[in-house]
Length: 328
Image (cartoon, rainbow, N blue to C red; front, top):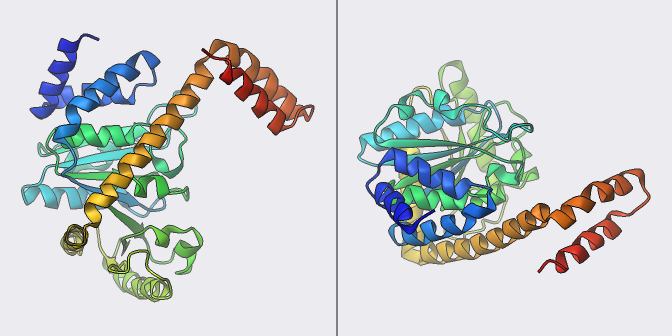
C-alpha cells in the first residue's frame, strides 16, 4: 500500500466519509501480516485526532435487550447533536470467522441515522466479546468525529474485563427474574460496573423491574466500591419506550465530569494505552507463532500427542516455545 493511499484513507476518515471509514476499519481489523505495518502507520496518523469521545461499554446476557437499548440511547443522543458510533460485537462463526447476527438489522433507527455509524465485528473467540482490533477501531471512529462510542459486547457470561479496560464507563444491563440479585457478584461483573440498569421496565414488567433494582442496590451496598468517589447506581429503563434512558445518559455524564475533576480521566486513558501495548504484543506474538511454517508443521503432531496422553501440555508448550526462539 502506497503512502498516498494511506493519505487518502486518513483524509476520508477525517472528513467523516463512511466509505473511507469502512476501509480504515477493514485495514486495522485485517489478520494479514502484510497489513500490520500499514495499519500501524494509519493509526499513527489518526491518533492525534482521537481520544476525546465518551467510550461506553454495554454488556448483558442474551435477551436483556442490549441492541434495543443502544438503538434508543443512540437515537436520543443524535437528537441532542451527538455523533454516535456503535461497535457491535457478534459471536463469530466457527467456520467462516464472520459475524452471525447482523447487528444493523437489530438497530433499525440508528442504522439509517446519518449521525450514527454501526460496525458489526466478529468476536473471534476472545473473552469479553472484543475483537483483536476493537481498540484500533475506536481510534478510527473517534478520528472520524464520533464523540460517543458504544461498545456492545457478546454478553454470554465471559470475562468483560477486556471491555472495561478500553472504555471510560461500563454499563451492565439486567432484567428482572433472571436469577437472584447476587448473580452479578458471583460473575465479578459488579467489580467493574459503573452502572447497573434493569431493562425492559415497561408494561406488566415495570413493577418487577423496580423491585429487582432495589435488590441489586442492596447487593451493591454490601461491596466496597473500587472508586471511593463513585458507588455504581442501579436504575431502570425501557429500550422499547425510552423510559429512563435520558436519566442514564445524565448519570454517565456525571461520572465523566467527576473523573475529569479528580484527574482520573487522563490516568485511566494512560493506563488503557499501556494495556493496548501489551495486547498488541501478545496478539502479534501469537500470530507470528501460528503463522511460522516450521512451527505450524509440528503443531498438529504435538496436539495429537497431548490428546492421546503421550505428551504433557507442558512438554508440548516447551517444544513450541523452543522452536519459536529459533525464529530469526
